[in-house]
Length: 446
Image 1 (cartoon, rainbow, N blue to C red):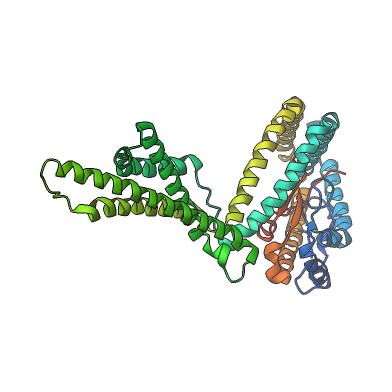
Image 2: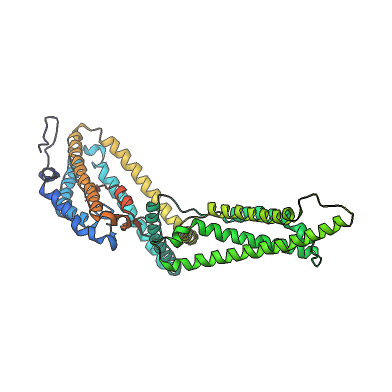
């Protein structure tokens, strides 16, 4: 690849030419060696693959084989080429206009330095708050594991877990069941000769709770029928479902029997009161008074069953996993706030100094790049960036091939990525999340 042109005002360094001459075509030996490495990492799908760190000359969040390939074929040659271009910016710069430098390497080094100093602050505060830090790490580890399980299950089902709003759920049950039960049964219970008003109200509430419990159990089991009774499910799951069905059915039958008893007494009292005036009932008799009440109670029960069915998820483990995640995140967040309050000022100062240096570098770079003598080094740097794009394309292609070789097991693959978090320095990525991560080569000053 010839990089010389009449417009260039400086010769291309040999080290840069060596980097540009690396054959990175898809059918070249170097590219084929990278793809062969997928055979070594694909079997690690069950163990998890740890990705590279955020700091250092290598790209962040690449697999060990990707990092090994980069170090073997690219890193040393590219570092020399980049260093040579940086020297050209210093040599061709007008000293009267300040120090010559390549903006991308200056900014990259500032960002790298910020990360290193942040990690030092995190480590210092962690040593001073051991108990809290250990608790956060324990929670974050559990969050990472459960979060990965949740993401895998979410990908399989194609949806989030349905978490019923407990207040809404029980308030609707309270309104529908107790309101309806009071209208249907209170008069009958008050007609019992031995029942005081308090007993009548108490019986109404108990019947409402029993019918609500039956509706809750039955609606939940019907929604989760496949989870409990699916042919592929473990038989041990059926025990809790049978208990809910039996308890709900028992509560419903006992409730309806008690309603029948109260309504029968109410009907007898009603017949006596009508007969004492020498009149006959015109309201339909026993079937209407007692049977209609039972039917009304059963319709209320069916309404509760429908409400429970609509509000619950078909996979209770999925819901429990989401609840555990939410609870652990809430506790971890509270503990993090406690620690972050102590280290906030130091991080704030580091970030402010970083931003100031970035602004200074960008301002100085704008003045430096106005010099005509630096057009040649700038073009050389663009050539290096074009070669970097080829390296990145190969690494992206490797990720795709790696996930393909994992086959169906790719859905449960675990990629442990590094992140800038004082409490949880790693996170677990799914295959799709790993594939979506951007890969960039660093531009660091020597």
